[in-house]
Amino acid sequence: MSAPTLAEVVTVLDELYPPGTAEGWDAVGLVAGDPAREVRKVLFAVDPVAAVVDEAVEWGADLLVTHHPLFLKGVHSVAATTFKGSVVHRLLAAGCALHVAHTNADAAPRGVADALADLVGLTDRRPLVARVDDVERGIGRTGRLESATTLRQFARRVADVLPVTAQGVRVAGDLDAEVTTAAVVGGSGDSLFDAVRAASVDVYVTADLRHHPASELRERAEFEAGGRDASRGATPYLVDVAHFASEWPWLAYAAADLAARLPDGTVTTRVSTLVTDPWSARIGAER
Image 1 (cartoon, one colour):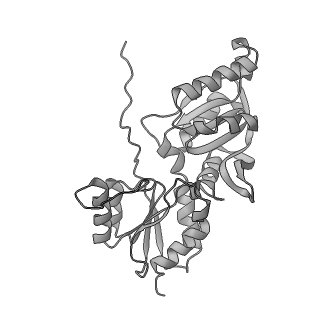
Image 2: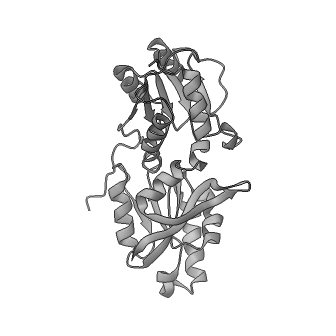
Image 3: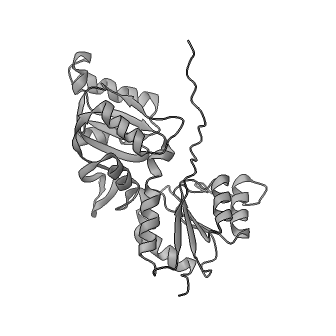
């Protein structure tokens, strides 16, 4: 059986993650590649960085699908003398196309948010910020945990199910407090604190939490709970993970869903296990 063309594979990816559902500032879709070429091997990764390109080329991938865009802003050159231009040249020289599914994959059913929600054990869930015309599609997910637990135990589960990174998992809140509900957002999530508060969940899992937004959220929660003596009820608590780690679980869903929609045996998919989180170490004080 002949392999599908790149155009046919992109059609399936666009059905799974419609480009029209991406945020207005985003840059998704086919970045480089000949739509007429056949695709037999597809590699999925979070970041279109040099190490991932090495993996794609060495494996003989015909298509690299990444979550993060290579070009989020307009450029005037893709010359191989630039580090991003060199990515394009190396991929094309090896016959490998590049496709991006970013915020359109964040919002999709079985997308980034659902994959993260599944790993942390979220049930009876719904989008944190739903799209008006689609009850299944939207930013983040909220729901109930499979069983009540403590913030400490919940954070430990998050650490255990996500890829290991130098950052690890940071927690804000009383570690012995009980948690039964949660919200999750893959990638940077402190812009959604108002939605998290409105959802009235016990704990929020996301990435890239900045000092001032996180501090203000916790201070407000403690104030509204009656002061520091009532900190055990000062929800939402925060669980902050590495950006890469929060989005990596989606790759397995994307690989499986693409393969399931193409003729059996025509395309082999693979998930990159390279940790492309930019932080390489965490060093504590010796005193």
